[in-house]
Length: 303
Ligand SMILES: Cc1cc2nc3c(=O)[nH]c(=O)nc-3n(C[C@H](O)[C@H](O)[C@H](O)COP(=O)(O)O)c2cc1C
Image (cartoon, rainbow, N blue to C red; front, side, top):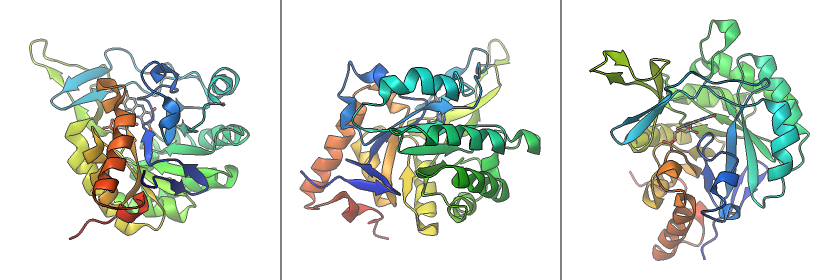
């Protein structure tokens, strides 16, 4: 076995494979298919301060080599998470990481403070791709100044590992990544979904109730890979890469581009055992190329 251990801030993972928020539930849903304790980190559903109903249906659409979703961060709120979900998942022997969303800085801070008290949650992932109500609905993650402010405020309240998840719907993602680093993030993860749209020509109507939605899956991989490569060259904190990873080869490509760890999202819907296949595939690759450790290939792309 090659050494697959990865450290992200104070977070210690047995391998670089994580699951992407919103695509793996709370892990429990996958227990019948795989031993979820083999996974390096499980990022659970997006959690907000208050309960959210999500968007009206239809909120999913299939696209060539991918999908659009407009779930709208449906969840029962952080208090429900603490009372009803945390006791069920806290003893799973992997890193359970909470993805935190909000529409105002105070929401993010309060949610992070509550999660900071949970011993068995070693990290949060801050989803800054969501609307800032005070800025007229513009997402925090599309302006470096807003990204800096929200990350800085959460950094003061949250003492454990802080991962900031970046939106690809920007002109220069490196600028936002540097703002997150300057504000004290331990790591950045990218990419969240790309804004897309689907139309039903027969009905002359949009397919999604929200008209536009977030694109994910194999089709977004080249864009995600390019952004991970750009960001890894621009920051000194570890980068977590995701977007269209469907197999171990895709995962290796992200690591060569500079990602210290990777997340698997949409692929879980196609093959619920994909995470363990990717862990095994990464190990086989390292052994075949005679590398001792995963760290030997992070950013090892030759140009
Ligand atoms: C159904 C669905 C729900 C999602 N929910 C969240 C979420 O709650 N928070 C978040 O940060 N990202 C969410 N995402 C985005 C994914 O975590 C991931 O960033 C994106 O899908 C790209 O990776 P992929 O191509 O491997 O799926 C969601 C994606 C999908 C498809």
